[in-house]
Amino acid sequence: MTTAPTIGPATLTDPETHATSDPHALWTWMRAHAPVHWHPATDLPAFWSLTRHADIRAVYRDTSTFSSARGVLLRPAKAGDDPGGGLTLALTDAPRHKQLRVLIADWFNTRAVRALEGYVRSATRAVLDRTTGTPGCDFATDVAGRLSLSVISHILGVPDEDHEDLYRWTNEAFEAHSSLVAHPDIVGYFMELLYRRMEKPAGDLLSALVHGTVDGELLTEEEAVLNCENLIGATENGRLALIGGMKAFLDHPDQWQRLRDDRSLLPSAIEEILRWTSSATHSMRVAVRPCEIRGRRIEAGDRVVLWLPSANRDEAMFIDPYRFDVSRSPNRHIALAAGEHFCIGSTLARAEMRILFSELLDSMNAIEPVGPARALRSIAVNGPESLPVRMTAG
Ligand code: HEM
Image (cartoon, rainbow, N blue to C red):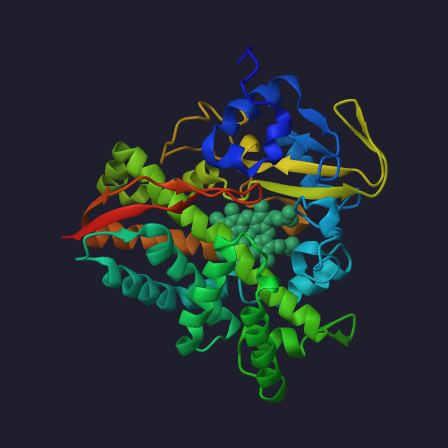
């Protein structure tokens, strides 16, 4: 692309850009003409934008130069530093990050996810049973939202009878675009469950957070609750990948038919959904020492923002990047980040996609839109927040 797009780099920080216009036209232009771009301060602090796959991957992997501890998302300057800074898995640097990750990783590794597959499958069938035969449903909330929340709740150790409450509270928080820690019911609920697990551990992740140690010390109550909140918040990405994947198939029915005809394409289809949807819109890092990227000097203390959907459409990495192709190979997307902070929920997210889409292929004769999809207004995550569909079993 040689002509400048109608919107400029400054609009990247406006949630409206991501909801109603096409940031890809802008990112394509930035990759070609301004791959390391300085944004002066507005209500957000000043930052550098990176849009090329190679640069973004390099920053993710260089954890000795780029810190996560001051936050991994852009926040208005007046909001101050992220309350999870230095406390939650995503917002901790080495060496503490590694120890915290070891504590949590057992619940998300390949073996754990394999053991969980029966639960994911029955949760999937339960959400689909509630929606089939109805004149329509919202795939975003009724299918993907319910499914991803019940799976993470199960892992954390939330009793089944409380899933509905948690589902309602997290929906309220997501709809208000507010953090889960700002929702008093969620914090109150986890504090109470945490005290129950202190007295009587169960074999769940919350018990591990309460009884496990980092540097020989137990986590504080605040750390345990913030990590629960962080894990639930992180599943919003998984939910958006499920919804975005469904929307991609509705927009490209030929690709749904290819998958129907040849199920061996499912693994590559999942990677393509991850690349195509890139539901995490950005990650932020703060440089802890001066460095250079493509000849631009980054000072210690500078914020660097990595635009993931841009990396995943980079023509230097992908052939025909704007084509949704369920057989794409190779597919070196970085939707799940790279390096030490590589998404801990990646195996789980892939399993949820594999199970949901194979259940849909097995049990649904037709899936059709019954209203317009509505995109999220956010600069942190992207995808449809509403996707009305009618599903006909057969
Ligand atoms: C398709 C779905 C998903 C996408 C696209 C995604 C994306 C990402 C990205 C980009 C990061 C790096 C953030 C950063 O360091 O700046 C990350 C980290 C993380 N993700 Fe995911 N994620 C997904 C699903 C999940 C799920 C289902 C969970 C479940 C718990 C999860 C939990 C986490 C956690 C805890 C981290 C922090 C890891 C660390 O810092 O060591 N994610 N994810």
